[in-house]
Length: 448
Image (cartoon, rainbow, N blue to C red; front, side, top):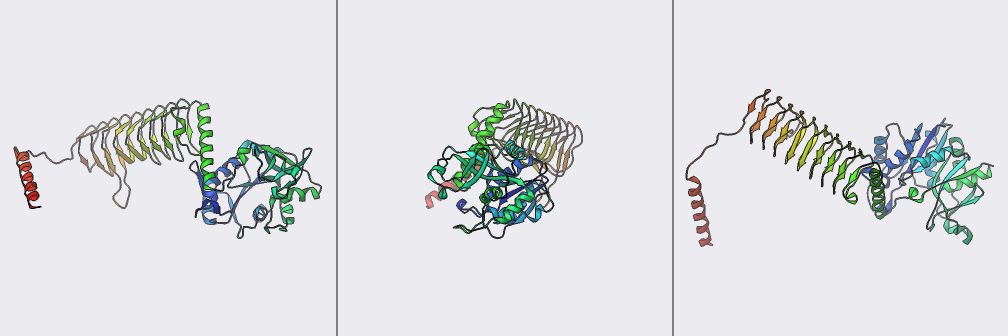
């Protein structure tokens, strides 16, 4: 069955106390909206419709960043969930498949749950959950396998409040039926708003079947405050770490490691304490990420070692067996097989050839204040400590630079390049200089 997703993302999120639209607050380095879109993507939807309102331009940019084919529609006034879903009317024109209404601030629904929702046989299917503490959730009132109605806590009888099957807000129905039901939703309530929760009763009044698919309560967690956002981040991290451990990754202190939504780590990789993975990181089998390193937008190949205290920025590509050591930063650079940059260096906009050794304190001077320039270091080259490579510049295969050199022109294969001033020695001058300085200091002390 073809599927369309309608993701409600129009809310301001007043309790967040932020200028940022609620659905753009990040969990594991990605906006909540991306989590919802990612879960729905497993269904290979024919259409993905995001309903934006507050901060619509920002929400649209985020939606298109995840899925360039997504359609963003505007809810000018926030008049309830039913009103929000109805804004998808034009975007659903001609679509006869199943429409699923999701929420951009409910990031943890599993793809498997959505697949179960698609497979359900009822005309309208509501996603519910058994709540440990039902609190003020809306209750799902059932007769056999059919949903009779959704009752809000404030309107429920004592018997109805005893029901623990609660409403997540997520529902599915064929698109034409969904639009027909939404057109019938009224706003005769204390808030004067249009609610999705009216749909089951409207469907039953037409003789339609209304069923429920149940999921774990944790999947339905909605994020409405900074405290809930922090709790959601902690929940994501614990689950993601546990899954990686199950998959064969070795964590020395898992609670100190922070992952992103798309972090990929291969089996037998070793992750030491206090490592942060930003978005876009892949670490292959057998690699080691040592303590206090920060990685984002990079690829670390098999058996490479990174850190401690290393930073890999976007575009860093480390081949097999590469060594990147303490206080080394790599950005938009490829280090070929077995290359080593072990200490206190910056490698940016560069290629470092296989087996090359970059000495401590080396800097690729890639920025002239306006443009970025590239450095090429050949295979098995040796870059002496404290070398400044002023790009654009190329160091040949098996070439060498002397320590403390400033290299401003290309070095041919196998050559030694020295780019430093000639050393001048003046016998006895150090003692004379110190005596002069001490005398000046004593004179200043007497004057004060």
